[in-house]
Image (tube, rainbow, N blue to C red; front, top):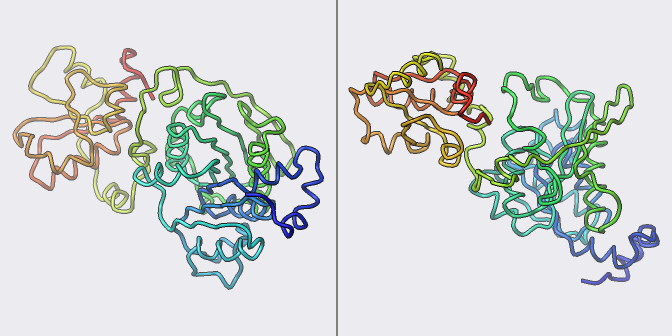
Length: 383
């Protein structure tokens, strides 16, 4: 699509830049950008990319506008409180630039919808605020060979990078495994300075425009860290991990999986169950003694996803993903003793509670999961 006369006037101050020109502005007009989240990071991205002349913006969010959003999410005003975020954002973006096509997805990003949504876009901007969505976005981008423009904020600090598959590292190269959920307070718990998402979001938008124009030096292989209290900008080099399970030379993650389970993030009911009672446990050392003496009286069930089981496994373990544990419970003997495990112990604890409701009593959870077992058995890879 070529520029209209109205668009040439609207973008004239940008078109006269030698590295943009009419050809570059037409690249922006023909671009399709997907924003994961319309919050603190999504707001500046959406507004400035729309104003800059990006032709299509997709918005993924499943929340409604809350009064606590307004100090940093400038897509919304006081009159938008209680409204569906993507709908309110669509209206605001169209008021900034009616030439932009705005596609909205009022749904939670998941392993079921990520690939179908991502496939129609040129660039994915990660404005999410949680680790499961970041790992999901990263893996989906790699599987579809889409650029991932990353940003995150917390209190007075933020960071940004560009993950470009086959050119540089990915998010998993930077963070091979998520931190324990209790060590990562959300903005609700820890707070965030209102202007900080604006700053990081504009860095993401700048990288997006540079990528679309094919100009400048992208933040590929570089992590830009910002501290607004000191007003310091620090750059760290990121190396591609050749053993990365998703972008490495021999990837073991080839399809999207259970990211909430992988990050140890429970849902409401799971949290409630954890508070109301623990499940029986077996330590990695105890299980190793059983395996070393070849005891056949205890069987091991791996409730992780198939790709995780292929990547690392305990000898003789039976793979039954958590989502299938109820449907496949008829394959198990209620009188048999089982040790269940996952990556960290959370999913297997949930599986034990589900089986306990069906009458299974001789169940134990591997404390700390297979990663804890890997600490005493170096032959098993940790991830």
